[in-house]
Length: 216
Image 1 (tube, rainbow, N blue to C red):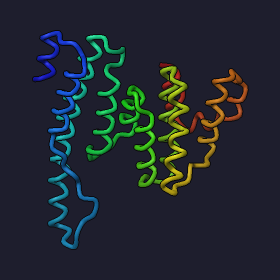
Image 2: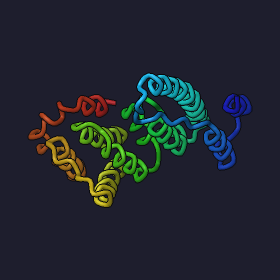
Image 3: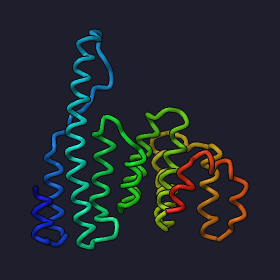
Image 4: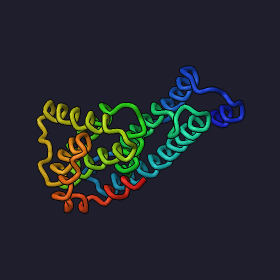
């Protein structure tokens, strides 16, 4: 209803309205889904199911509120994609509170935001608990999404910050063909040395998002 008031009243996006949106966002309950079941599987299984159901409801309610706020901010002209601060807020919420985290959605909001360092922190956290083979895809997705918006600066910042954060947490930066491709891609775009891309065609095909987002 608050967003409807903003729309109907044609109110401007400023520090005051953002602060009110942030306070509403912070008031949404956080329901943490348990990571481990206890000895009594049936009892804990029921509790887990209830926690997941409650988390889904809360997650969708808060996400819907933030998406509406982003649409409003875009309509009043803060930027074509809406408020960068609200995009970061939604990305953090989806990652931390959704029982079924969609990393593509998380990344799409982060790259429309204005905080690549926070994006790098989220990726470092994800890499500490994801399945093998998901880490390099998550990194490549973020870089390609930045590049699809013509944002080479933040694509480089994401890579640099992620390297630093992984060092501090004793995690290794992935050394796959896909990551090697990304490492060549960034300086290639700076130098217009496009022939280098041909050598890594297989890595491009490995992540279908490359062609998808470069065409947008």
